[in-house]
Image (cartoon, rainbow, N blue to C red):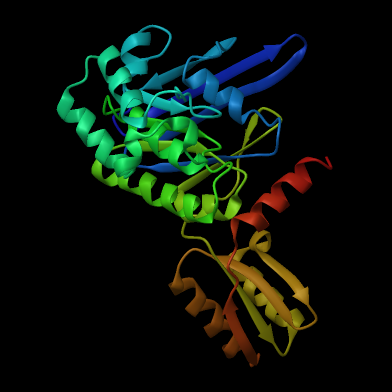
Length: 304
């Protein structure tokens, strides 16, 4: 495996009875990268993540974590990762600090690291209260503190924003960004909150019907513009000659949408339009958000 990746999944397959839930799933996560993993219910997100943390055994495929093969060097591979799948597994009758200290004792982790984890949670005096009285956000902070005890290189979270109020979501987002920066960690997380995925993720992976969907990377250099012109037919032909048909679309009687990869190409498009005596009334950037991409991908995928 390339040293560039902290996680690499190759050709993962899984069936339950006659139903194939994962079909040749391959993905990767780089060091110090936050990757969003999204798809509709039943798409295969949770099964993929459970395979990665060894809760589910795939029929075939390969999973490498920080250079260790999960199926050949299980303890070393799992020692490099931490995961929160579904709700945090905490002892409700114990205090927050007692939860951290118990796991630290089982893993032979130093008292110094315990104090670092306690400080990381930002729960302060609440650490001395029973977890049963914690809010969902407080439980999430405690669970993350426990997860980082062993200084994992890779953290995986399944729907970490579920049940959090707006302030809890903001705190979680800031916390995960801190983990990447301060703990030298990479993160793979799933969520149905598309706006939060867009704010947090460096890159996004789409899955549906057990297959990874190849789509343009929304974090890439591709930019989309809309131009309003005087002579639509001539303008379309001009832009198509430069960019090709695949990235040019007529969206109104006087407006064209097109995609480019850098500003030099935009200057070239405008120069060609003006040289053909085509008036450009307006031009503006058409920002593509994740909700638009999600709707386009899954509406198409479920009507085929």
